[in-house]
Structure formats: C-alpha cells, structure tokens
Length: 506
Image (cartoon, rainbow, N blue to C red; front, side):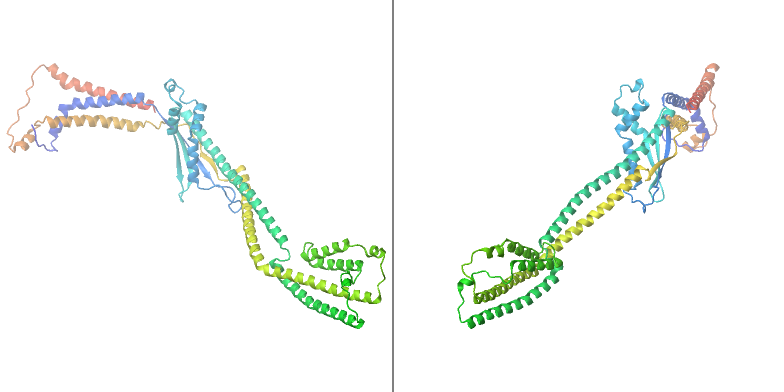
C-alpha cells in the first residue's frame, strides 16, 4: 500500500520490520565479512621506514669565507630529491637490493619497475619559522620491513653524498668560470697597458703633464732667438764695417768656403757638453737629445782638419782673408743657431698646440685601462674567494646534511589500516542490508500495529485479532528459531575469523 504514514517513534513498526527482513541484513553482513576475509588474505602488507636528516648550517662565518653556493635549502633539497629519483640511481638500487626479482615480476619492464620504486619514495620538508627547511624526512614503502629499512638508509646516504657532490661541482664550476674570465681580462689588461705605454713613448715631450715644461722651454727659446737675431745683425754689421774699412769688395767665392769659428774638437766638445746638459733634463729619446746626437754624428763624419791641412795649399791666406773668413764664420754660426732655434720653436709650438688633443686621447686610453684594471682586480678577488670556497667544501665546512633519526625496522604495517578496514566492512555490510530493507519497505508497505492503522484511517481501533499459526511446529521452529540462530552464528564466526586474521597480520 502506497503513501502509508508511520510514526517514527512507533517501536512496534521497526521491530516488526527487523523481524520480517532480518535474513537480508544477515546475508549482506555475512557477504561483507567474507569479502573482508578475502581482502585480508590477499592484501599485501606495506611497511614504511623513515629517516630524518638535519640541514646543518656552515661551520664558518660568512664574514670569514664568502659563500658561493646558494643557501636556498628548499630548492637544493628539491633538486637532490629529483636526482635520487632519477632512473640511473633507481636502477642501481634495484640491482643492489635485488628488487622485483620474483616470478610475478619476471615479465616486468625496467621502466615499470623504476616507476613503481619512484612512487614508493617520498621526501618531505620540515619548515622552520622563516619558512626555510631546517630538516627533511626520507621515507620508503615496501613489503619487506628489513629491506625497507636498508633501502631507506641507502637513500639517505645517497642524498648526503649527492649534496656534497652538488656543492663541490657548483663551487668548482664557479671557480673554473672565474679563472677563464680572469685569463681573458688579463690579456685585455696587458694589451691596453701596452697601448698606453706605446702612446706615451710616441708622444714623449708632448704629453699633457709636460705642458708647463714645454711652455717654459718655448719662452726660453724665444728669448734666446731674440738674442741670436741681435747677434746675427751685429756680426753682419761688423763684417760690413770691416769691408768698408778695407775698401775691398767681398769675394763671393770665399763665401762658399766653409769656415768654422771653432775647431772640430772644440765643436765636438761643445756638442757633447750640450748633450750631457739635455740628458739631465730629458730622456734618451727626447727630440732635442736626438737632434744633438745627430749633429755629433755628422760632425764626426766630416774629414779631420789635420788631414785637410796636409793637402797642398795653392796659396797662403793673407791677414785680411783670415779676418774676413773669421767674420763670415761668425755670421754663419749665428745664422745656424738662429735657424736651429726657429726649428725648435716650431717643434715646441706644435707640441703645445697638440696638447688638448693628446690629453683627450690619453684620457680615453687611461679610462679604458682603469676600467679593465678595476674589473681585473674584482675578478681576481672573486677568484681567490672561490678557491677558498672550494677548499672549504672539500674540507666539508659548508652547509651539510646530518642524520639525526636513522631508519628503524617497522613492526606495524602502514597499509592496510586494519582498524579502518574492519570499520569499513561492518559499516558497509550493515549499511547495505539496511538500505535493501528500507527499499523493500518502500515498495511493499504493510500495517504494523494498531497505531499505523489509526494514523492511516484516522479511526480508533476497537480490537486486535491475533495471528493464527498453521502447519507443523517443526517448520515454525526451523523458520523462527533455527535459521536466525544459524545465520547469527555464521555471522559471528565470520567476524571472529576476520578479527583473528587481522590480529595475525598485524
């Protein structure tokens, strides 16, 4: 009958419903317990071993040795976790501990073995107050508790070893890079230094720092030029006066005769004295010094006066000719000195005029040299720090990992959780049975008790007619007593068997 309303507090209804459909609840509970027993018998236990590794800070202060390796521990641990879970490392563990060697795994590919082993490995970070990992846990799950512990210890040792290799490779790579850069920068520094030196040697005497000296020399040369011009004019005047007094014209052929006011030895002595004087003021490659040296070489190349004197003379010189030759030699000497002074003045004027240009060129070269030298010294300092960091890592003075809680052989399996398994089986069996009963009650509704009739008809019940029992007593006993007892006993036995198996398997 559809749409029958029942009072939720009508215990007579619920008792009647349970009494009518109890066998369904027993069947579902028995099936659930049987399934639980099957799962306990076939389910494989997985054990988990853990080891805690402390991230130990470096032993030396950053003020003593500047660090090169990044101290971002989270990134470093993540990198190490990826390295220990690489295929090469996992294959090494599979061969070392003879994993997946049974008949059931004989047909497995190595890729599948590596994938299964990778899923069983776990690395978890423990973050401190500053959200930086101060320790981390390495765990491994497997079916053999002893082997699980051994593999966990091997993974922890592998992480510590990989950390040392990673830090050492980083500092060695940094050191190699700095050495290569330092070598390149040293070549640039030597080349720039050579260019600067060559420029200074090429324009020696016209450099900016020599401007004041050049101006001073130029003033002295101008003063001396004024004096020499006066001496030239006076020597020419004396020659004119001498010729006028002698009342004889000057023979042009005598002007071509080289007459020297000083002998060759006296001239060489004067030039050497002038050379020593200039060497005290200038370098050996100064143009003035080079000019005096050239004059000495030319004078030394001239024939000796003694050899010339041995040549046969056509006629002896008169007193007039000797005096005139001396005056002519004086004029030529003064004119030569004047020409030399004018040449030197032009040279020093050119140096003074080119000083701004030389200054700009020298500033550019000096700036490049200073920049390259500064970069070179900076790289040199970093390379020295890198070498110290390499020695520090080799002596294991940097940030290291240390095991503070080694792995222990697990006694209780992690999977499956027996308490949750029993609870799931009981709740599942009872829930499924009650659900079926409720569905049957909805589709096959009946009156249970006088209260249900009164609620449905809104009429009072005058009397109840008891149920008339028909048939043999044995059949009623079998239906009412034996079947429920056997079903209940079976359910209890199955529950006891399940609990016993769970206790045996841990």
